[in-house]
Every structure is written in structure tokens, then in C-alpha cells.
Image 1 (cartoon, rainbow, N blue to C red):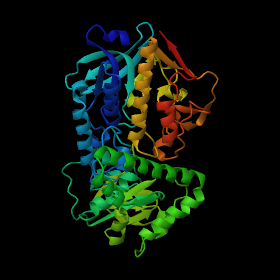
Image 2 (image 1 turned 135 degrees about the horizontal axis):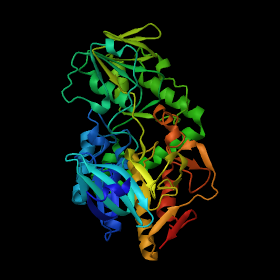
Image 3 (image 1 turned 60 degrees about the vertical axis):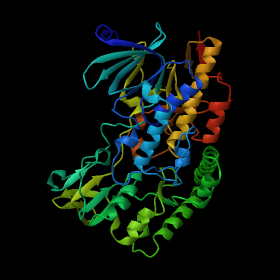
Image 4 (image 1 turned 135 degrees about the vertical axis):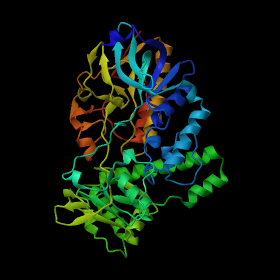
Length: 494
């Protein structure tokens, strides 16, 4: 129990406690410093460096699958002309943002958050933490709690068990745990999966391997965009950096919004358009279009974006191929498919996705009563229903993660300033009679496998504003940054 920790551990008092030093956590810290300078903040990060996803994943070719002008922080210009950037460049960018804003002064590394309990008597979040290097226990007592730990398990990616795995004599690798010394030169490689990771690995590895095959259970939409365009470069050369970034950012946000809303408004038309674009990219190759004709509509699952058609170039070169089938069994030398076809492999990469995990896997409770997240809704997609002084930052599923993280942090700052001005200590989102929509999780209407596997564990959405997550940047900008803070649904107390 929470009380049992207090006798043997160091206790630290904070105003705002942030969990996670990835994109969301760094964004939150920068916003709080600028907008709420009187607030004392602390960031707890389990790993020993910042960057989150962009430091954890080190597989070949890792890059953003959102354009960098919307993926970058609103307060720090992305100065590179490339729309899509490599993981190393993103890590450098995040480190620069943290250094320029002195965020490292507020981070405690190597801290695993075990549980967090709101104490109504103390009007504090009691957060129990373990320093993983020493095993020392610590307790943080915070007036406001922000969880910026993302939405997947950092310890273990999703990795189904395949029949006959024990027979395979080669290496089996998950991209989330890529070996630094892996040599795949001249090897036969099979990548299981068809999502963003798979379409990144194929072109990144194609030049060195003997042959690489993407084995997919069903086709995905893969859309090619230029990595650099003339207008972007012209604006960066002729305008001050901040102004050029602002214009490029507005432009790319608008284009992504039009693409998404068009897919939802005219799914059949957009389906034909995207398939036609894929067919054009494969012109002159022997690749059968059955591998690129999905059964679902665009944005029912995430759209895979590739820069300059590099994925399709790898297929056209003959060094890469696609197989659409299901696995019968692993064999000594590869994989046997249910169609009878056999894929030879020295290395099998299981790009099978991630394990969704809310709030970093910690147990949340209120007055020592555990919170069941699947019974809760999000207020304006930032605050959790019935949890006092608690924000959970989640990015968009159809646009860049950072867009939403910046908006959420901006809203938290507005909320804290409002509470300070009015003399309030506590705010609780209460839904009243708002109907819960069980078919919609907090991640929206995606039917991607990684969402469906844990759909029964995720927070729900409400039938109406402010409990409905529209996944709309323009709507959220109005709601989070411009509408009154004290709208219906929030209960304040002093």
C-alpha cells in the first residue's frame, strides 16, 4: 500500500510532476517554464536519456512518418528542408530543444514510476518511484500530475509466437530491440509486417542484403511524398527562420488535414486515388497489385508515408519483394506459408507492432481505490474523468504526435494559471449524464491490430463535446487554447 513506502524513502515535494522525457515530456516542460515560471517542475524518466521513441528505436532507416514541420515543436523551428527526417536528426533536435530551455535541470533519470495515488486529504498525488540503478525507493508528492509516457510498452514490443520457431536456424529480431552489431550483408531477410516499420526497413536494408521480402497478412496503403519541395527551400532561404517555419508548418498541417478529412468524407474516391498512385509507383515492375489493394478504407488504419517512393524503388530494383499470405510454420531455412510457398531466410524481422500500454504501465488510484481506465473518458482529450489534477498527453493517430502534445501542454498551462488566479487547488473532470461510446477508444476509430488487441483496456470516448476526441487539430486548437477554461464538465475547488 502507499502508506507503507513513506517510512523508508526520500520524499520530494513538487508543484508539477511530469512522467516521461520523450517528445511529450520535453514539450510540457518547455511550455510550463515559459507560461508558468513560478511553478516548480520535475520530470521522471525511466531511461538514462531523453527522446523516448526516437532514442529507443535504432533499426536501419528509422525516420519520422509525419512531416517534420508539424512534427517539430511549435516553439522551435525545424531548420532542415527535409519533410521526413532520420531518427538521429530527430534525437539531436529534441536534445537541442531541451538544452536551450534548460530542461535537463529538472530531469531525474533511471526512475521507474510504480504507482500514483491521489490523496484527497493532502490534495496531492503521491507517486512512488524506484531508482532502478540502486533499488532506492522515492516518493514524490505533487499538486499536479502529467503523464507523458506515450502509449506503448517500452520493455517489450508485440511479438506473436509462430509455429515451428524452434526449427529456424537463423536470427529472429524485433525492431524494438535491434542488435547494434547485426550484419545482414548478403543475407536473405524476411520482414513480417506491413506497417510503417516494415516499409522503412525494406528500402533501408535492400542495398546490402542478398534479398529482402516483406511478408504481410493483408495489404496496406503506402503513399509516396517528396522529401523536399521547392517552396520549402525557397521560404527557408528568403525568410527569417521562425517565419519560414511558421508558414511551412501551417501549410503541411493544412495538407494533412485535407488528406485525412477527404479520406473520411469520400473514402471510395480516395481509395481509388491512393491505389492509382501506388500503381504508378510500381510501373515497370513485376509486382502484382493484389499486394497493394487493401480491403479496408484509407485511415481506418494508419496510412504509411514513404519519402520519394524509396519503398517502391526497392521493389522495382528486384532486391525486394512482397508476399501476401499467412504463416503455416517456421522451417529450418525460413518460413512456409499456408499457400505452400516457401520463403528462404537467414534473418527474420518481426515488425509485428507494439504493445499498447496506457500511462506507462503504472497503477493509478484515487484515495487508494484503483482506477479502471476502460471505464473512464477523456475531457478535451487531455484530462481523465474523475481524476483530480491529472493530465495524460497523447498525440494524434492520423497526424504528428507533437501537434497534439503542444496543444495539450498549452491547455494545462492555461488551466494552472486559471486556478492560480481564482485560488483553486483542485480540478476534477466530471461527466454527469454524458453517454459513453464503447465503440470508440481514446485512440479514435482506428481498427489497427495494435489497437484492437487492447481495445477493452483503453479509455472510451463520450457521445458529445468535450468528451469526444475529434482527432482534429483545428478543432482542438480552438477548444484547448481559445475556449474558456472553466467550461461545463470541470469541477473546481479551493
